[in-house]
Length: 146
Image (cartoon, rainbow, N blue to C red; front, side):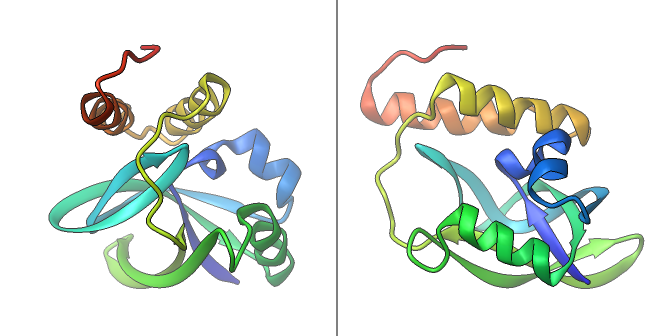
């Protein structure tokens, strides 16, 4: 079993049940020194002093291969191990991040709604999603679909 951190559409319980039936959600955890960004899809940025919530899963090797295909690994997303605290102890978890530094851009409304649903399922704060959307909107001087 591998610990996996999700912060985008893989926070959604129903979607993960279809993609990775053997995956088990363990709830939310906090990833320090990173923040959420939108580059059409969710991405993470290393940002000292920031933190973000993620959904923690246990996944099998088969689940990871399925997620690799979904995330376009190693061309679109790469992965790394990060330290997080879970149930009072430090663990290593795998997380995906975009391979190239794509320009910030808004997600589709459908994608955003899917991510919101996943955040609600894991009792994660929606303010991180809205803040990431607002950062794109401000940078590009555009209106968003809040």
